[in-house]
Length: 243
Ligand code: TMP
Image (cartoon, rainbow, N blue to C red; front, side, top):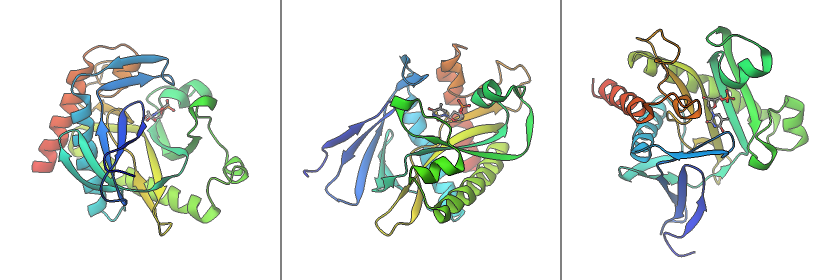
């Protein structure tokens, strides 16, 4: 395949091949979607912000012995990543009840969970990314029980490091979504992005339930000031990194 061929265009990123068959180029877009792309829009500057935040967080996680697909950023909205075979799961970790957990269980938003909850959703837009049980994961041959154990351990370690980092940013990490892939040796690497698109981030210095939202829920729920919320997350992440 020739270098720089567009391989795939997703809702928030475009994936290109490069001259190195082991390396892909991800271009982060300003496009935003919600509710399985039923709602569409743009968040000005989001591509650069999400690329910058993801780059910072993946490097922080690498330093903490979490293997990731990250290589480097050749420009402000572009990231070079290792080729992996994506495991078709959205691995969600929750520390505080919000979103679909509240809708599906009746738990009140904001309730602190007794321990982090790890959930597995099938990455399949046509099926609406359904929540899977452990037995359904095995039924669909998505992972082996050994791989599932590794995913759970990695998700919990990542949660620990992200919580510690965001606390230093005066941000409460409510929940987030991760994706993983396997490399040519079948090693599991953290892939995709970690950004205000894929996390719920609440400003610890705000008590008002609307004012505290610093993530894509501002876009999902039409809360306004989406761009400035994303910018504030970026500023805090960069200032903690520089400290
Ligand atoms: P949920 O409460 O809607 O299930 O979302 C849980 C977390 O996963 C939240 O931080 C937002 C993130 N997420 C994504 O990154 N992509 C998605 O498609 C969805 C539905 C949620």
